[in-house]
Image 1 (cartoon, rainbow, N blue to C red):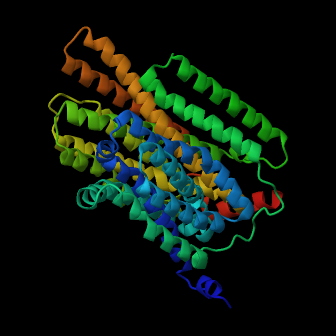
Image 2 (image 1 turned 90 degrees about the vertical axis):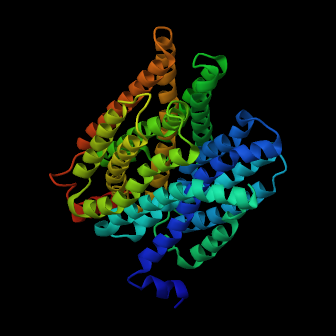
Image 3 (image 1 turned 90 degrees about the horizontal axis):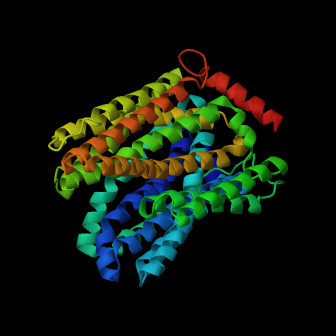
Length: 487
């Protein structure tokens, strides 16, 4: 009997798998926030402006978003354990190359390599956790994963600031290498081999190319719409290209026998409603994440460390709430927790809409904490509900869908919030003072985010299920096995 087989017989084996998956998730999340702290230093070092350097961030986000679905599908064919383990190596290689970059062009290219590794891990994290934990513990496990994500966001700015100031900006990339290598070795000996992979199926390369190109054009069009204007030729071409590519993608997926994504998954009301509610949740969340720091710097004139403390309230509250919410959802189901969580988000956003030119930072802290509480309540039960409806051979692509929805929601939230703020601010600035126009425009942004959160709560409420939950873990397992038999 091999070491892995002996380990799998241990009652705590699933938590060892969780620890390995959590390491990759933490590293990928940490890197998303740690790089932002180093951008000013890198800008000076390479002698480029922030507009050029921003591509190091944009390329990372676009690469991950375009490849999540493909790596989820690939994992269903060759095994989630293999794709996840190789993701550690890709991330280590990309990090080493980023640390060695001699100019901004090289840095952007190497960030793409790093993002490929991150996408391989992100696409399969939830699938691995879902496959290892029984329904009665799945919510708690995914809730704990939410805490890992929050801790990565919390640690990034402070650790990045320390590394940049003491060792230089290259250290923020080098620190990933030993962690990724240890994660890869551990994955080889720990992660379970999938027993129900779709070995006889082929990977849909054409579908992957269509989806990757379509989602890249869409996200790039949304991002550049803020800079070049929504009616500019450049943005219109990108958005038109995304519509064409994604349209051809969906038509192709309906016609071929082995598509990259089985669109029949969306016929399940729990899967569809959970993803729509998740999308609206991230859209609403990033209405505040992007614009609030500008308000604190330009209007309240807070220092960087003060802004960091205010923004920390959100992930801190989320980290404390998510595991308990996940545990509770294992007993009661997701319905009340997801609906209640997004409703609390909406309340926090409505309260935040009462911004002023002299708002107290303490007022911002408890409102951000309230929204972190709502997000922690929502995310764990929602993810558990979505992943619990998917048959085991399709957990990889389902995890890719959830991760893609998250990234798309973030970009839409930033683009939509900036568009609303800019339009309202420019209109009011002609009839009132700069300060009044600023706070009123920002207030409208937060009110719009509250409405979006309420729409998400409504979608979550109508997802179905018996009172008090979604029929209980046993009923969900029976439904899942029934679907598996139909494949």
